[in-house]
Length: 142
Image (cartoon, rainbow, N blue to C red):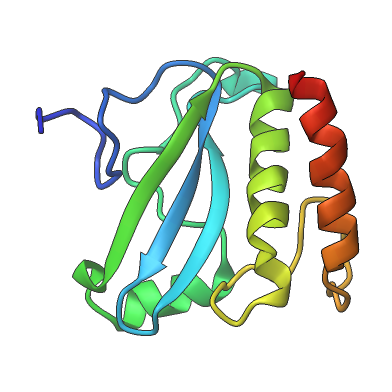
């Protein structure tokens, strides 16, 4: 794999294109994941257009921050899942990833909330819901 200036993020291309990226952090010791997003450049105020600390950025999760301070960073893997070119695309991709993985309901994820949802999710998506949605989406492909 070619060497890129991506900091600790594992991705097959040079990062920094577009608005930002959706990422997954894997805690190799506790076998848990965290899904998040990070922007490349400030979007507001006096700092607008200034590059963020994305190469060094780890996570906004307070719990992961505690782990990062207490444990060697080599116990974690940092993956860029994909870059996005619009703010809405980035937000949607993060939400979609959290929903598809059902992260808030799984002990395999640190995530317990999704975007504007400020309460703990307690009900999984039903099998029937998934099957009906899949059937509808098949129609779109035709």
